Image (cartoon, rainbow, N blue to C red; front, side, top):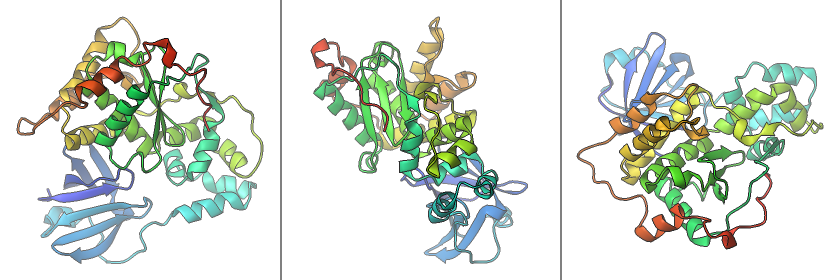
Length: 353
């Protein structure tokens, strides 16, 4: 096992401390939350050494970087490229844009079919993701909550969890719907139903849920789900300028894979740790929903739901860390009582862009 490593996954703008172990065909990267990612040797690019670190890139993921402290464990080193070189990404954003926009002819469709939905989604320009999102609808009873104090509290929570998120374009909207739910939407958007605060009564637990949804946004899981559901043929037609039938379904019906949910949980655990928010509160939220005679909300489902997810948050608790409340008392009260005064409701929620 490598003594120490630092990893940037190309999605979350944060360095993660990791350990690295060899596998039969490459390496496994394990972060502090226990989340493991396998990488094939053929996908790695060796960039050489600098200041005591061996630097590696990924051939298909822009912004991905793994630095290993030298000397690298011999067993790990055997799974790394031996030669320095390679330009990094072989599927760059510009290449994808050019390939898809040239034509919607069969050759382009055939070319796209070789890529998994997550690869297509990862390189999809945000404007395309927003256009795909326009095929879906929010719930019919979606009414926006114009509660300034509650919205300020939600923004403060996001800034605590991911200081770069709002600068990178992430937006959050509070809806007056009784369901206990929160969701990531296309185009770096998130929604929260104020019914969530009736079931999850601790702001620290809400922080874990919001962090999970931020991770879905950062990793382009929504775009991946849309590509998987609509099919690559629809994506090619839409981006080539053709018309497609509207009514892709409900945005809340989009399902993430077990792997995507695991990734989002792992990222949420890292965010909570960096923000100094007690992760055990999120575990308690999982426990609470399992005791109710109702289906788990979308943020808690895992095809099927698993108690192991809550245990994973609890296991990340560090006795040596100093935790403090996710929000101050005033902000916490404003968020947890959001939209209770019906005068704070807007007439309708904006349509997905």
